[in-house]
Amino acid sequence: MKKLLSILGAITLVGTVTPNVISCHNKKVVNNDDAGTAKDLEVLNEIEAKATKKIAEKIKSNMYVDSARNNLENIFKKVNSTSQMYHLKLGSGEDNKLGTYFINNFKNVFDNVNNDLQNEYSNYFADKLPLTLDDDRNDINVTFIDVDALKKKFPVGINPESFSAVRVDYKASISLEYKGLFIRFDLSTIYNVTENPTALKAISNNTTTFLLENVKEYFAKLETVDFSENEIFKSLYDKGIWDFSQSSKELDDVLKHSFKEYLASKKEFKDIEITYNDVDLMTKSAEGDLNSKNKGYDGITDNYKQKALTLSNWIGAQTNGWEDLAISTSDFVKFYRDNVGTIFSQDNSTDLSLGSFIINWNYINIYGMGLSGNVQTTDGEDLVATINLSQPAIDKKLSNWGKIIITFIKYYGGKTIDGVKNIFGVTDQLFKEISRKNQKNGLKDVIKLLVDDFKGSDDAKDLEDLDLFNFMVHPQTPKKYPGIIINRRLFWDSLGKQPWAVLFTFGEEFNTGLYYSIASSDGTYDGNPANGLIFGVEPKANKNYILG
Image (cartoon, rainbow, N blue to C red; front, side, top):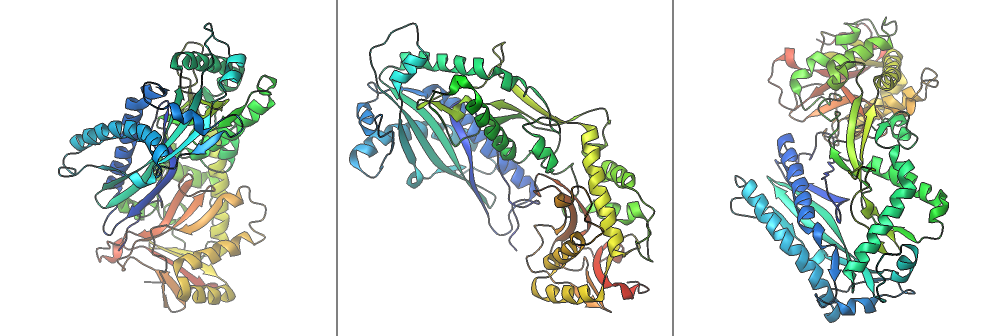
C-alpha cells in the first residue's frame, strides 16, 4: 500500500532562513511503498530545515559581489535601463561562464552543509549524502540596478564615480531522500553584483534606514498581534486558519498583500521603483502552541483514543434516536477542550501563541537592488511578530462549531450504541442515493451526500460559520472504500486492513483548521469486537434495529 506522507495529507516543509537565502514554497514530496511514518516525516522536515538554515548562515556574507575580482564584468552588458531583465542561458558559452560563478559559489557551501548533515545523521546516511543538487534545474536571472536613481534618492557621504550594478537571482533545486520519503525543494539566493561594493552597501544601508523610518508605524503593530482583532490577520481567524506549524504561507500571503497596499498608500514611496521577490516576507523564528497533535483528533494517529472520543462520550448512549438530545454547545466545547484538542484545556486567561516571526527585507527590491537583513526595532534588535489567539476568540469559534455539529446530529436522528457504534438515520430516498454512491466511490461520496443534504436544509441555513464546517473522510482513507450493507444498514467497521476515519472539521483548510474524528480504524484491528468502531447509515425506518 502506498502510504501518505502525512496523517493530514500533503505535508509542507518549512525552515527558518536568514538574509539572502530563501526556502521557496515550491516543494514536491513523493512517497514510496511502506514509507512515511510520522517520526520519519518529522526527521525529513528537520533535515530540510537544517539544510536551509545552514546554507543561509554560510552564504549570507556573499550578497555583494565584486565584478572585477570575480571576472564578471560582462554581466553588465546583459541588461540596461530599457531592457532590465535577462535570463542566463546556461547552455551557451558566455552565459554559462557567468552563471558558473554563482553555481560554484553555492555548490561549495552546499557540499559543506551536505557533509555536516551526513555526519549528524550518520546512522542512516553512512554510505551516501542526504542532499542532491540537480544541476539541470539551475536557474539564474539578471536584473538591472538603477544606481543613478539610488544615489539621487539615497545619497551617501562618499561621492563615488559612476558605477554599474545588477541583481542576480539564483534558484537551486535540491532533493532529499530519507527512509523511502523523497522531497524536492527550491532555494533562492540573491546577489548584488557591482563594480563598487563599498558604495552599493552604503546606499543599501541608507535605503533600509529610509524604509524603516517610513514604515515603522506599520511594523510596530506587529510586535504583539491579537489574531482575532488585528486588521491584517483577522480574515484568517474568521476562516478558521489557525495552525501554522506545517506552513506559514497563509500568514505570509496576507501580510504581503497588506504591506503592498500600505506602501502604495504612502506618499513617500510614490516615486520610488519598488518590485517584489517571490520569497517569504515573514519567516518563523519560534513555533506556536498549536499543532496537528494537540489541536484535535484525526482518528488514525493515536488509535488508543478512538473509543474515548466517540460521540457517546459526550452525548451519551442514544439507541432511540438523536432528535431530542438534551445537550448544549457548552457540552461540546468542554468535551473538545478537555479531551480532543488538548492544547485548549489550559487556563482560559492565557492566550495561545500561533508562532513568532521575523520580517525579511529581502522581499523588496528598490530600483532593482535587492535588500538584505530583517526589519529591526529602534533598539537595533530584529522585530519579532508574535501572533496570539485569545481564549474568548477560541470559545466563540468552538461554540459555533459545536452548535453546527449538534444540529447535524439531531438532523440525522441516528443512534449511538455500545459506545462504539455511530449510526446516522436518513430518508428512504437519500438512502437509495447513498447506496448507489457507495457502489461507485464508497465512503467519500457517502459522506459528501450527508453534508450536502444537511447544508441545504432549513435546519442549517441560519448557522453561523456553516461555510467552515465539514464532515469528511480522512485523507489517508483509500479513494474507493465501499461499506457493507446488512439489513438495510450501510456501515464501515474495523475488520478491514485499510485505515479510514470520518471527521468533523472546522476551517477552510484541513491542515490549518480543527478536526474531530467520531469513528475510525487504523487498519490494525486485533479481532476483538470490543475494540472495533462502526460508522453507519440507515433509513430512519430502521429505528428499532440495533446492530449487534
